[in-house]
Length: 421
Image (tube, rainbow, N blue to C red; front, side, top):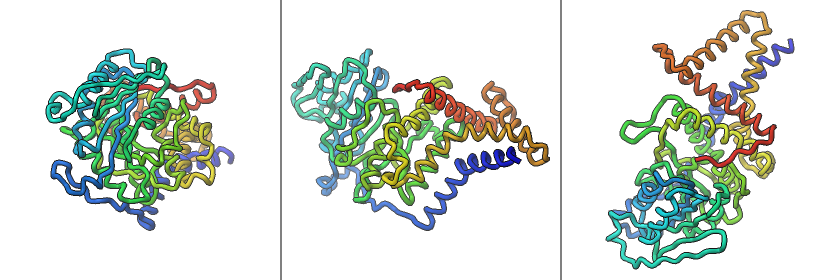
């Protein structure tokens, strides 16, 4: 009898995490929608008379050893479809040991304007190096790029705190070095801030490339499901976390929201602090950035372990997330914490099925074993015809839950996760 209870409780937890919670969000979005009151955007190239009403934006980014992509990223940011005089960039180099600091210094010397558009940006090339004994800030006379050089790594959270302090825009655009932001994405995100209830707006990360579209395999499939959940959360409330590669936040809501220096999930804690202040954090799928869907199995697994470890860390850094101070406490538990329990529920379900003799439980055991066999086949690279897509989904599911188990072991053992690119 006890095993029967274990079986059904485990099945209920797994079912709620992946099916029940999204279904509840869908129903809530239908009975209590909260549409965002957006402004009507207009391209900066159309010479709008309303440009004075467009908020100034500072794009902030923390990088370490990104010489391969940093120049491309800066050009990507500086050529976004947004008024030139309303957009600047702050980059913190967190102990880079490659050519990243030299590339950033070159942009500062040339007013942060890439070579192909530098002739259209009239200013002198004087630069000013200000040193506080620990870091160096490099700026130009009228620069659009300012960089803070840290000789030793202090972590991404510390770098973000420094970038926020240096930022001057009314709205901050948070991004990372590797991903390419679509030209109109910033303007689309800014439209959401016409609604005074919106404190932050997250864009959508696309795994693939613009020419061939987003992948539906592996982590791409998982990410598409995750984005649908965020879309449903946003439709009638706030999202639990944002897309770290592309999101905007009001500067005034960040002054009292600096991050603890060891924070792993800055893209969850910062938006949750904004929600705590009474503002909404929404998801806008129109604003997109692109990234590679395949960073290598080992690297992707390590990144997932780090992310899931960050969920455990959040409970230590911000216990208020489980209190009434968190207006979306139910969503936080359902979206973030319930998934941490799924690996244990899967193990309990398998063990309970093995000990229960009734036909229903025998069938459940066979189904689980077949599912895990498919995941092993996908991990081994075995092609099994029409079942390959199911096997790929099974592999992703098993890898993610294995990462959650490793994250729990690391948490119990006191092993700290560090910032990884």
